[in-house]
Length: 478
Image (cartoon, rainbow, N blue to C red; front, side):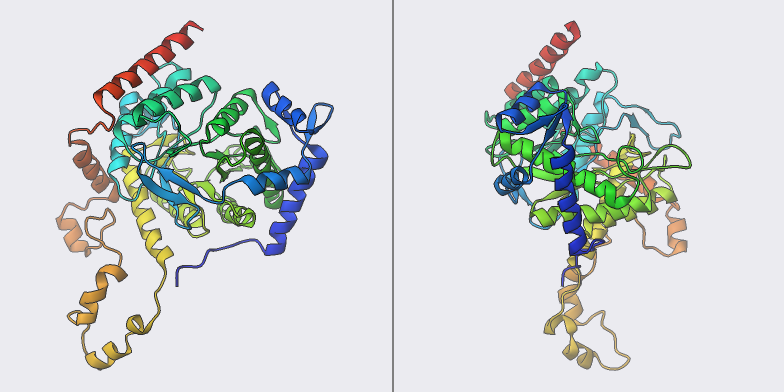
């Protein structure tokens, strides 16, 4: 049997949260500084009181009815990659860090465009990584252009699906132009390979930049991951149930917006939980409450019958140490064993501000182990193996038995070539007593030493370079 999905909420508690979220949207409503969002609501008969727009439950129900229950996700070259919502988590790199920690160095440095190339090439070569997110913002380019430059590198050096969080409409349009050039397709919704992540400002406010992105993505049919951030005790109630209720309300609101713009737009129920450290005064991305909230979120998404995403594996640690490993393993387990469909943030640490090439590979190893856990235990006459036990007999050995030879490759996690060592201490010491990060660094160098592969053709690459140059020039002049 496949490992059962872990849960933290009873069915009636999920229903209570959902109904309470509907009350919030109806009785309190939301506000926006986007004239487009406000006009969209008014055209559809939404009541307005003192600038607050009130969403009735029937409008939410209608939006949920038209939201697809699963999403076919493609590669930029047009090959079907996976189906979001088929019950198997997709793992993406993470996601808009600003610092890079090089191996053997104690202080992180500012990310550069060459880093976006290297992270993309590495992630494209790692089997456990299903998609590429904007791993690091290049800091040597103008701030408004960072995400555009990063997406150019991603579209150049990978043919995996891609995830990004547009911060303003101009960058979003430039990214769409890049995606069209790289893929050779003028319709990004026909075989979608991009997932855009717009976020409201918690609590219950849609700013102009995110509003433009959600509207334009919905018009194009690009899948959207709605990602509220109601930090408990800071931008949301300190009680976990209250934070979940606010997050659910904001997510439902995102569904309403997308379906009013373009019914049938694919939408993902998003969550990137952190808590507020009341003792230290900072954001806590490795708290036990994060894991509880991460388990609860897929339950709310399943209640709606929709796919969901989460941020993980996460850690507060600033280096690749024991804290890093513990928090990342717990975070990844909470996401992968609860039924999350997309997990974005591999390779990140230090409160999601810093990335490391070695961390990508270590996280991929954690993912690989958890995928084996998710597969569970197959129980049937062949696997119970009564005849095998009788044949081998008392004090016999199973290592050379045909049953072992037939099943060990499928049954046991393959340890060959892994970063986490399984040798006895004397053999480990004799081979250099290397830590996992050292072995990861060797693997990184091996992958990046190979000639880079550019996936689009030369004409497409030239067009992409032109799009980026024109974007830089236009917005520098502004």
